[in-house]
Length: 432
Image (tube, rainbow, N blue to C red; front, top):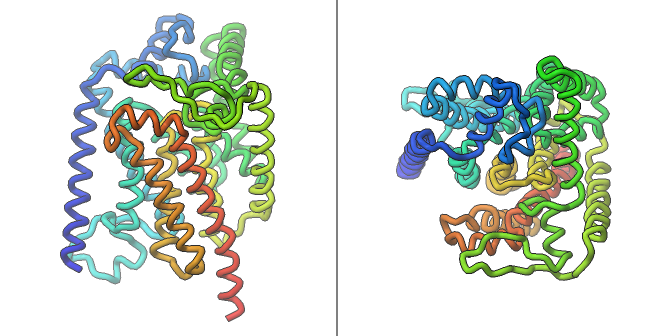
């Protein structure tokens, strides 16, 4: 038992060393999405068109205002700026883990020390517990991806998880503020707002929309009415309209459907310049759009029906399963589903590990075996398809077959199975 604990502590130390190395290494880099954030802020400071550079094409106008302090800090010292941003990214991920554990188990993370008595640990869980380490290791690829490209997705996840946490505590103004801020930066957390609409949480919806309008109004004060309207029009026409037409090639559900249903290469850059075709049908883009949205509406309606009941304060774990499902599908439903977005899968892997290894009595043995197969299949597709394990060529081949998307769908299916069976478990417990 002591050897196992020592091994976990060594593994934790190695993870910290790897993160420290990555932070320092990436702080010396001048590329990545962060360069676009700085460029956007400088365009605002110089009074130029914020969409005048091809690097800036997916962020709404409010993002440009948030980029201004980043640009000022970067102009002062670009290395210190990047080091600070990357350090805060790691810190944000730590708090994501902290809040996920707290919401699921009503416990806090702590760093184990021999002098701490068991009595003080009743409401705490060691940070080197397998329950924490395994989901973190699975998600580690995407944390490194965010660090290497110096991106904002970990912060978006942090704001979204904070919104869920404060909502669960009944602090809806704070929850709405964080959710609206995340939506205003990069739109994809809007799926959590749609979830609150399904749950008929009208107070939360109203407060979130109030803050969204407030954030969206700030560009009008800075750029003026006509310029801001032009910015929003450009952003809408260049991003929202094309991607709603199932037009982009990445790891989204829509991209997967396009690859499967049209005789068209996913467009990945292969070392041998070869094209990969994975389609089973050869439909037109309009037909693909029709099939994609029809299937999405059918499956979405089933989930809406399943989640139709109001949230119960007495059943926090069931509510957490709902939140986790929404976080899991956010990356694949976002038309701009780049790999770094899949950092949103950490809560999903956490809840899967919790149910499959720590709460085995929640589900029957046969179902557990099936869900375990799904769990390992998801890890294989989502994690072991990376360049680290397969090299660039075969990693690109796996991505052409939408491995990350399929792995995420499998993971989301597991969560729905847990959700259905947790009701059965509590019914049996009540009857006993």
